[in-house]
Length: 293
Image (cartoon, rainbow, N blue to C red; front, side, top):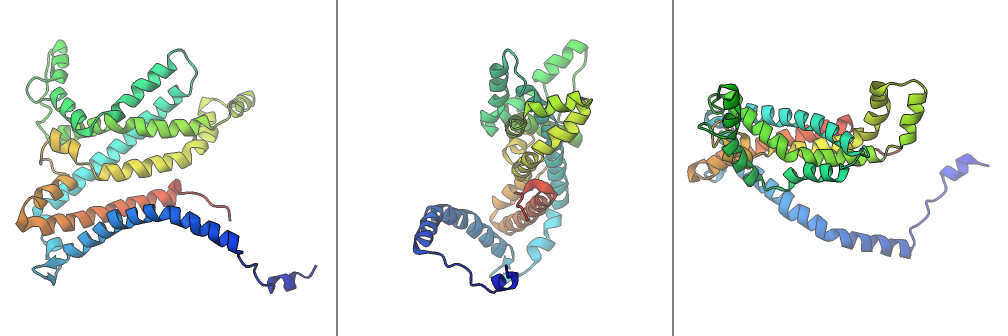
């Protein structure tokens, strides 16, 4: 066979049926494309443009003056709560998913209980936790009184960030647990049985079978939840108000003032850049789809 001749052979042309079929598929995708462009790309591009416009001319003053509007504390608080909540959610979700995958009496009831927090409105759950961690009284202090002491949960920055982190962990862990449960369900029990016969202990089975199986879904979960974490708004606003501030509460606070709308736009751009960097890191580490080379 002459391989060199095949290299110069013309590529097969797409027939009319294949073109029509692909065009029909494209038409089905048009509403989704229009939705993304009209409600995501265009507003984002418009905000980026407006962040550089001051009194009708191009300027960087919104960005240069933003540090004086409590930018750095808001940025640090957002990163601490987002990354901390993500880590806690991932660990607990993995434990919950591994329990859900086990066949035991009451498994369906346990799975239902696990999902309930995710179905509760964010504002409602934030209000519930504000009652639990109330500075005066509160259900948490009522429990601690059994042991002879109480605690002011709003007495320090650390405790207030802890309240927001714990509330966010309770609300959103079920989503990651369900994603990881799907990954665990795809692992054949025969793999664990064969590994056990070969002498592999629980840790080795977890490292060499479980983790590789759920790694892609873990990346997807971190991507979905990470973007939501950096956009956290309702929980801190209800629980702690505008202090300690987060990026979205800072944006909302400035957006309410006509004179500070430019600061809100510039802070939004900074938050968008952070989210894009985070998404790029997750995708680079394995959160994106894999294609055969």
